[in-house]
Length: 429
Image 1 (cartoon, rainbow, N blue to C red):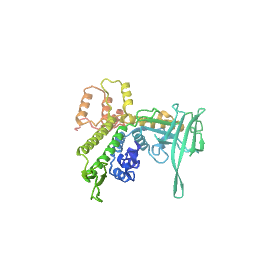
Image 2 (image 1 turned 90 degrees about the horizontal axis):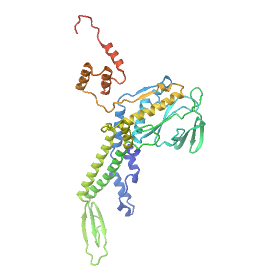
Image 3 (image 1 turned 180 degrees about the vertical axis):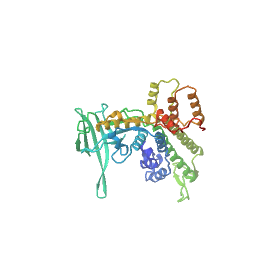
């Protein structure tokens, strides 16, 4: 998934991990290296995974998320990670990672020598060990040490552990313990929990989920392999192979194309020369197969938008079906919000603030379209006839992206009253 998201350059850099050499090339003197260079150069990896993820993140964050913080955490709104990352950008990063790998961890932390609380994010690859009891986590951080103009990579391992009910951090530099400290609540009280939030594409379960777009990545990978074969077949078709059987004096050069000589062990040898080209039906079959993989990728991506119940399916059955099959965009968005809210609540505890003041609420109408004029008129008419109350009308207008999601219906009524002109008895309008 990570390579598929990064695209063609990352895929080709892996060489035979994603595109094997053809079997016949191994018999050549250079083990097929020269042919493979052309083979992989001509291949094209479709950039559908990155495009799908960027589009889905755009939908997920097309509307403002409701993020409420206690006063002690307000600085995080503009600087969530201690490096100037706004909290809205952090929420997009979480959603992106959930779509790529189906997993993300967010740690509420503070400098060992004191300082402001910040949120540190860790990808699926960085969370390498954990306990189901929430009392042990191991995080890996790759850092670079500079010596003049030369940088060397150093692997830091950060171990978070509850020891006798007290939260302890240990930091290892290439397996050597270099730092050990006990984070605390502002004021000095020891923490009795590890302030980390881990979640997947469907829920806050510690068990890793299947990446929600793995079907798209697999279809793209298959398309990449088929395209390489297709271009190879076209190249062979344009420059046909001359095959000589029992030719006593084979040609030294034939212009374009290749020459392959075969010597039989038969008596009374009679030389024969023939041009060999790929069967057009085989090339057409590759085109059909590539189209099939492209359609498979589209179907796999479309499953993310499947948010409709099946018949009389109960809510619990629907939840289990989604968990068993795949995540939906709505579940990814809700999980992204839950991860951030949990980490912020723990940050509030560290800051000595009320965690109940933390609210992270993603929009719930991401996949609903904007109401047209006729639908708005029908809703207003039904409200005027007394079919439902104004609050219900307003909720529908919010879902239809007409009314502001940031205002309650009471706020909207006050806005209406404020905007009405002052009309004296007898005035005409």
